[in-house]
Structures are given as structure tokens and as C-alpha cells.
Image (tube, rainbow, N blue to C red; front, side, top):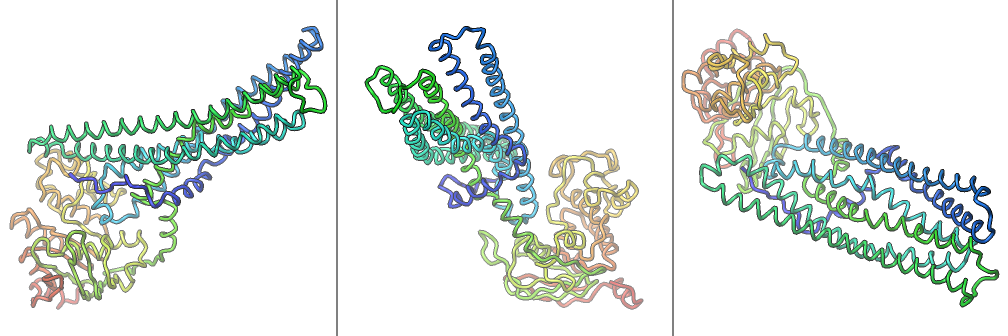
Length: 591
């Protein structure tokens, strides 16, 4: 069970970068996002047509006293315009939802690819619950940005000013009033938006921490129960839930405030137009060269609410932008923005490894571990191809660290080369195909024993899986159950640690690497089983390079060379290879 190390409650220094990244993700929405943006603009033209037709109908009925039969065509046109606006609204909503789903799917795929490229060292100080919350909740928080905010923002930027300019030929005063008041609303909304973004960031932080807290406590519920800490952790989860609820209400308060600001200025604008039109009809104001007709006045009054409608829509969805920007900044601070990761990957050179056993060369290698300081320093090692090497030392001395550094699973200083190729230049797929590491705590997944073995080579047939299982002595315990169909729980539940190691070794026997790295391969095994496992490993390692990190003297004596790690340095141990391996050398066979 892990604790949450990440605390993004402070304002992220990546907020600006996150905003730019969000804008760059618009292309992930594709054609659907372009449709969603275009629909409100087209609907704006229908809005003008509706106001014009309706004002003309009323003018003809009241001023010109035209009979209803003579206006049937105009009334039918009005109904058609209203129906078209309703259809456009439906199309825009559907297109926005589709664009949002496409964008979220693309972003989640990029984030997952970014995580796959991360080394296990990066994951060590990360909470799995927090990372899961990033992939699910933080990406989901981007939904409103693509589905609603982007179309509303474009419409609010274009339509009010277009309406204002279009009304100026009809009435200059009304057009000017709209032209002046419309930009004031976004300006004051921006002021409120700063508070909304900060509140959204705090809310998302609380929600992310709650997700991580819940996931970690759920994973460790058995341990908590055994040590009598279950009730205390329930209280912590309840307190975190209350914090999320309080922050949610804070976001809602700011959202209501932004709507109130917009409604205030929109009401002033509409009331100003109504007052001007009314006083003009009464003769108290005469700012026109010609009398204000009934149609012109009605058209201005009908357009007044629609001038501010795009701004109202933007205000209703403005918190979507704040939430999305906060979510993007949070993703940047925890996982990193996918675009940057992709650029880094493309910049890395890629070289293939030679066939056959691989030489290993280390020069001036040093490793620092978080919380432990310097683990290894100035390590030099030259292993010819086909050689077996043992790394001796007690637990915690740095054996696993060195093996992981060779496998490029831990950041190290100095130079490491495999097969004559610098480690940093080896392509990821080539490295994982030609260099196989069996860690000290191999990961087993929920499924059968055969499923876990076949993980090394999914296309392997049943005969190959069974042969690998026999070589790793898996059948010794599998036959006590359902054979290779025996179920295994997540993280190897249901079998012992030594049995889990044998399943991992069976995976090794399904591969064909040039370099084999083993970390405590005989841990948790009795002496007799250890001897049989070492024989199987040495048989598989013929024609390959083998490095074994172990604290077992018996295992080390079976290798060609022995090195002891002490004080962060690698020291050779005088050693004569086993008689069996000497005999192979005399026969000229590869060792």
C-alpha cells in the first residue's frame, strides 16, 4: 500500500503550457468539432431571418392591416426557420458530443502510450490511484471544453459583433449600444474566470487525491484490517469526501456568480434598447433622420436578447474551460503532456542489437536512489559474450539496482553498452526482445498458470508452454491442482513466492534473448530445488550471456565469474568455474 506523493494543490507552473496544449488538441476533434463550431454561426443567420420575418409579420398585421390570408406564406417561412434552428441545435449538440469523445479517446491513447514509455523507476513514487484518476477523471473533465465551450467561444467572438454591425444600418444608436456593451461582458467574465480556474483546480486536486486514497486503501484493506486501522482509514476517506463536496460547492458558487455578471450586463443592454425604442415612439428622443418604423423597432427589440445569447451560452460553459485547463495542468504535473513525450521519443536514436550472445560493458556507472543516496559509484565491468556472471552481496547492497540499470529500467550515470551498442541508442523493441530480466518480485496476473507463462510469447502453443513449465519445475506444484489450468490470483495470490519465481522462469524459457538478467532466481527455494533450477538456468544460458544477482554462494559458484558489491563498488572475487563448464570449454562448446 502506498501513499500519495503528488500534491497539485498549489498553482501549477505548467498552467500556460497546459492551455496551449489544450488548444493544440482541437485537431483531435476532427471534422465533428468543425461542424460543432460552424453550426452556431449558421444558426446566427437564421436568428436574424427569424427576427426579420416576425417583425415584418407584426408590422403588416398592425400597421398595414394586411389580412391573415395574405401572410400565410410569411407565416410558413417563420415556422420553417424555427424548425431549422431546432434542427441545427440538435446537429450541433450531437457533433460536439462526438468531437469530445474522439478528442478524449485520442488524448487517453497518447497518455497511455506515454505511460508505457516510462521506466519502472518513474512509477515507484507514484500512486496507482492518482495515475488512474488522471486517465479517467482528468481526461473526462475535458469533455465540456470540446463539446460545449469551443463552439460557444467561437460563436461569442463573432455573432454579437456581427449582429451589432448588422443593426447599424437599421438604427445607428441601437447598433452602437450593442457594439459597446457586448465586449464588456467577456471582460468581466474573464475576471470571474480566474477565480473559477483556481476553484476548479482545487476541486480536481481534491477529487484526484480522493481517488488515489480510495484505490490505495482498497488495495491494502486486508493489511489495514489485520492491524486494526480500518476504522481510522474510513474516517480519512470520509473527510476527503467531505472536502470534495465543499470544493464542488465552491465551484458552483463561482459559476453562479459568472452567470449573474453576464445577466446583469445583458439586462442593462436589453433595457437600454427597449427604453430607446419606447422613447423614440413617444417622441421624447429624436436621434434619427427619419421616424422609427414599427418593423424597425420590433426588429431591434427582437434582436436584443439574441445579441447577448451567444455570450449567455459562453457564460454557461465558461466553467468547462476552467475545469479543462485545471485538468490539463494536473495531467502535465503528474504524467506529462503527451505531445512533449512523443517529441522526445522521436528524437531518440534507435539501433538494433547483434545476433547471438551479447557482451556487456560498464564504465564509470553510478546510480542514486531516492531516499538512499548513492547506491553505486564508478562501476566498471567488461563481460565477454557467452559468459555467466554472479553479483554477490547482501540484500539492499545494490545488486538489483545494477541489474535494472543494465536493463535500462533505472537511470544511471556513466556509460553502459550491450553488444557494443550504447544502451541509450538501442531501440526499445530490440532491447526487450534481446535482453530479458526476471526481477526479484515477478508480477503475476489473474488467470491460469499457462496464461501467465504465455505472457512472454503470446503465440506459443500448448506444447511449448508445457515444455517451459517442465524446465522451470512448474509442473511439480501445478500437478497438485489443475495442471497449467490452475488459476492464479492477482500478484500471484494462491501460490508461494518460490512458485511464482518458477512461473517467471518458465516465461524466460519461452524467449530467445542474447542477454539474460536474473535477480535472486532461487529465492524462497530449498537447497534441492535450487540445485535443479540452477541446472535448468545454466542449460538455457548456453550460448547466451548470463548475469545473476544473488546472495547464494552455491548459485554464485556455478558461474564463470563472481563479483561482490561493497561500498557501492564492484569487486572481483577469485573463482574457478565449475568442472562441468570447464569441460564444455575444453570441448570448444560455447559457455
